[in-house]
Image (cartoon, rainbow, N blue to C red; front, side):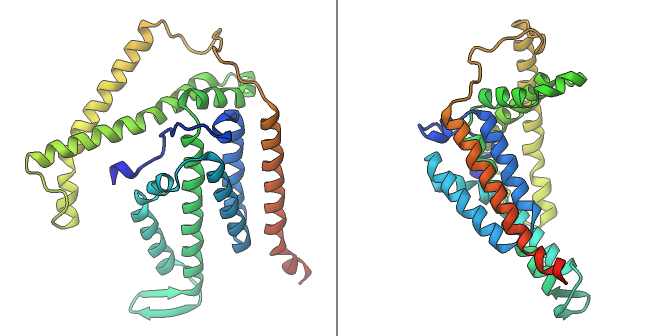
Length: 273
């Protein structure tokens, strides 16, 4: 399951999506997330899914590699579904004691699962097609207007970039620790939930130690290279918009306008009545 997490990983391949400006991909991800949560409409979700499939095709990233990232959150999706099914008030379909399933709960559970599925897939596309350095530059340029109110934009972008870099590193470290503990006779699969949680302690403690050690080494390396923050720094590869970037902006804005129109269709009958 550890190897199934793809968030924060970069998949190197030559595609038009990889060549786009990182600011476009950040803007597109934001637009996509807003379109998922703005309205609860099956037509909106179908269009969002079609748009996502088109983007995946343009990225040339294997679908199996992207879907693999969903396996790590299957437990979260199942728990969220059950909580919505049994705790959402409404028209009761089935009841046994204090447990009851409502029609509204089923609708809410399906909606949440669809949203989370599309959200994880869409967010993964951004990190899979954007290197950490590009993502840092894109975040910094996108939030540059906040410098007027003395927000440390460069430092914030740098922290987010480092966090994304550490995700695959820590996953690899966790995999190594688990294999070492299994070789020593550790058992992570059998027993009740309390026993399984206790069995994770020999993994978590070395993992935290390794994470702090890596963070300390990184801080020392940055200090040795006289890193003093973003003030006065220049870029080796400045970001410049090209024709394909403006075309991507037009497509994203058209997509968002279309999603708003589809979402507001549901409200027209309510406004008439």
